[in-house]
Length: 404
Image (spheres, rainbow, N blue to C red):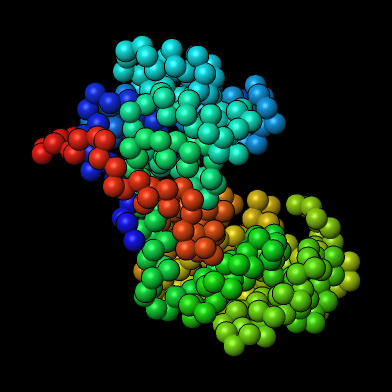
């Protein structure tokens, strides 16, 4: 298998480098709400600037259907500039005349292209868009792990047309996931939460034979509980997934999957709903369960605290509502108090840890929830494979001894 080329392999001095970053951040009233992905993108931009490169950055933002001013990259550019301490100029288009004109002008500013999904050909890996993106630069750096599972023009198409490398963020993500997928230190514990079994069934099947214990909470646990014959009230269930869940539970490794023994049941789906702890075997009709119960939280926490390797994706309940945050908080505290190598992914889980001030207690906080799950399930991603295929490119001279 070809290794991933890195920034250390080439000399970028005097070159224009297109960086595919993951700047898909939440906005509220035109203001960036969470800096996590912007902060993660900065080291690559700063490394290239120190190396003497002109940096052009592209990213998608949301899922616009055509050009949507509410999803313009302008507020992202403003926040990126404030965090990085350098000037950022946002182009008037993705890879059209405005972008080409900006790139052609000399300057020290970072150029941020408009939302790549303003181009209808982006998600189709349109060759024309890939050609126009490639024409803006001398080299390409793929650093958007959160988009590496998409074969788009800005992730795969442009990498097929330019000398390409993986950025430091992408390399760190690949290294972290390789560690848990290779020969992890044991006990190896996986924690899965979130809404749907259908989103994670492939991951469950891929990881269950490799783990010592898989802990499942969140709404996805109710389809598994239903497959075991439990009544789950009005909690979220995917009826068409019950047979698949039963197949997993009945497999030779099904005993490694641990479900809640108690839950926090509410009268309705609301932050102020009356709630109580109930046994998993005695969920009342009409109740909706919104968190794992205290007995389950302590049992899961003890397992997490004794692990040597942990992968966690998905909260244990509706952690945004304080009455239903205890399960997620207890597991986060157990992870922070242990010495395991830990990889945490998924926007909600990352947000929960950051809100608790525990982000620094995690060995690797992943920028890609869906990408991480697909990497586990498939073993690789389109945005990674294209870099391996281009590893033999030598269009750029090698890095000079003592270079930045």
